[in-house]
Length: 466
Image 1 (tube, rainbow, N blue to C red):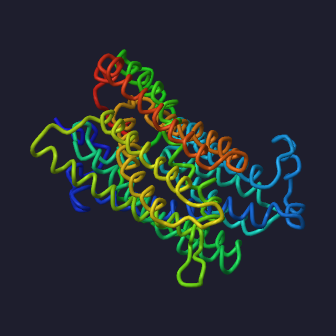
Image 2: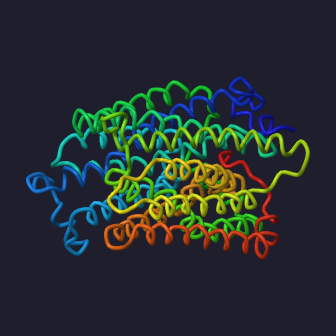
Image 3: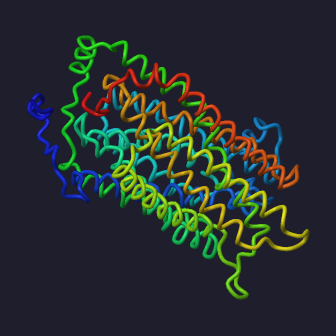
C-alpha cells in the first residue's frame, strides 16, 4: 500500500517527474526560494557597506530611531566594529526565529499560511530599508518574516516525496541551486543599484524581488501536497502517535550536531561581513580605470558555488555507479577539509601582498573555488540529513532547530568580525582556519563514536506528512 493510498486526502502525484525528474512543486518552491534569496542576500550584501560608508556616519546616524539605545547595549561601539555587531545580531537572529516559525506552522497556521505571512512581512521590511529612520524596524520585520518563511519552505521540499524516495537528497541540491541563482543575480541588481544609484534604490529592488517570490509561491499551491491543517486533529493525532525511542534518539543526534555546524559555518559566513570590508578597502577591484562594485564579490561567490553544487552532485552520481557513495557525515567531513583550504587561501592573500599594495584577485578567487567545494559538501547535505531524520511529529520544529546553527554561527561571525581592525589580517584568517579545523575534528569523532548508535537507529521519515 502506498502513502497516497494510506492517506487519500492528500491528492498528490508522488511519482511526478515533470521537473528535472522531480515533482513540479519542487520547481515552484525552488524559484520562490530563489527570489526570496535574491532579496535577502541582495540586502545582506549591502548591509555592512551601507552602515560603514553611510548610515553610521555623523549626519545620518542621528536619524535612525533607537540607534543610540542599541549602541549602549553594545558598550558604545563605533564605526566598523559597531556595524559588524549589528550585522552579526541581525544575521544570527534571522536563523533563530525559524524555531518559532516552525512551532507556528506545526501548531497554529500550517506551513502554507505561515510561509505566506512571512513573505509579506519580509517584503515590508525590505521597503522600510529605504528610509533611515525605520532602519531597525526594517531589520525586525526581516528577522520575523524570515523566521516564518525559511524553515517551513525547506520542510515543504521534503513533503514532495514518500519516505523511501531517494530523490530527496538530490532535491535539496536542486533547491540550493535555486538559492544560489538568486544570490548570483542579487549583487548585480541590488548591489549595483545600491552602490551606484543610491543605497535605498538597492533596498527597494530587494523588496520587489520578495514580491515576485510571493507571486510564484501562490501560483504553485496546486502542485504541493494538501495540508488539510486542523489544530485539534493534529493534537489528537500526536497524542495517539507519540514519539518513539528511535524518534528521540534521532532528535538527540541532530541536537548534538547543531553547535558543531555553528562553528563550521563561521568561515563561510564571514564573506558577508569582514571579508567584504577587507575587499572594499584592499582588493584590486578594477576594470581598466573603473572600480567595480564590491558587492560583485558575492556574485562571484554565488557563480562558483552554483557551479560546484552542480559539479559535486554530478560527481557523486558518477561515483556511486562504481563505488559506495559516502554518507552525509562523511561528505560533511570532506567539506570541512575544503573549508580549511579556503581560509588558507585568504591567509596567503594577506601574507603574500606587500604592505601598501592592493591585493590581486588570484588568492581571493582561489578562496571562492575551494570554499565553494566545501559548501557543496556541507550545507545542503546537512539540511537533507535533518530533513531525513526529523521525526514526523515535530518536523517543522526540528527543521527550525537546524537554523539554530546559523544563529550561533552568525553570532560568532559578528563578534569575531569586530576583531578585523584590531589584529593582523593574517592572524584573523588563521583564526577562521581554526574554526573549520575544530569542526572537522568533531564531525569525525561524531561519525566514529556516536553516529553508529544514535543516527543509524533512526529510520528515514518524511518531514512533512505530519
